[in-house]
Length: 494
Ligand code: GLN
Image (cartoon, rainbow, N blue to C red; front, side, top):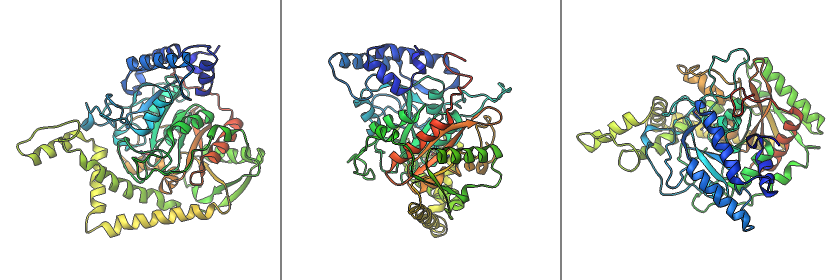
């Protein structure tokens, strides 16, 4: 039998159901695997004791013939989700020591389905970043290495870098992430795993520490498309506690996978052919087109004319919302307090010490674009652009059922690279941000390796609330790509 940590979530589920092993055994294997890859710094907090208790409780339920669809399956949680009685930091010094008295709706649903929590994963501070370099708790290392260059430490992408790296390294069967502009899909692509961002409103944001409320969405990171479908089925659903969560039924995503892509129309947007994109990424995109054609899909050239404005508009809207959301960290209500001689000074000292450089940059940009003198020129203008981006997609849906692009303009880069050039860092999200601005579901599926042996993802965008088609197309790519490469730094070694 394969090592327990090599199983997919679906295989582990079936193995538990067949009585081949217990959740305690499965969980112990993942706790040991976590220790083996601790140098990657995937976790801000490991919770092995809680995991053991949850695993035992899952086994007890199974004996009684009870237990939900994830009963006994060990997973990791991005440390942006509030978890009752367990420190939740958002990767920030300002929330160090913050122990929420409440559980996010998404994690509540996972625990109700029987999942086991291994710990809280590392992330860019307040989910602002594409490299995991902005975490107060130190960078996460990508378990993949460049061929012939083991010395270069690569980033796992961000902001859900810890969640992506631990799943790639076989330390967890699956994990949760959040995606505001690409933070599930880009780390999924960099770490050679599947990352799925559902439609805005599909998962409740209640209890997820807010970055940019009109963009943030929870979603799964897994090693297969099937596993992503299983996870999302549990994470999704209407929540009266989040007024932006949408009350539409959650379909059986797993069932959608088997139905194939025959007759589906797949759009290829010309505006995503970006200048300077490496030939190997262009080549992979073309390969994806050929795969889907061979599977019976029809390829349609489309235009999304406002694509080039998506990134600049995102970097107005997201910081604007962030500056407003982060106003609550004042040294009074949560986490860190740095005293001063007056309340004003305490407030300034706390925020000055508690926030890192990238968060401060965003708060400054956000406050600026919302200020009386510049609101019309920046924020309002960006909102208009956002509407146009949404219209582009709306028109595309008359011609196609899904859209295919690469996930990222490059493979994983080295730690420290792009740190002194925020624009170069922001360009990571150039292909993922349009779907975020339009609130659309999108998935990244590992599809090939770069010339130096690093994973590259293909990106599928779908209609609002049509995650099923996104999964179906993702699955077809997965089958054709047959991506079996594994990272160099993983539990069990290779
Ligand atoms: N990299 C993007 C940013 O820094 C997206 C982050 C995210 O999706 N949370 O804003």
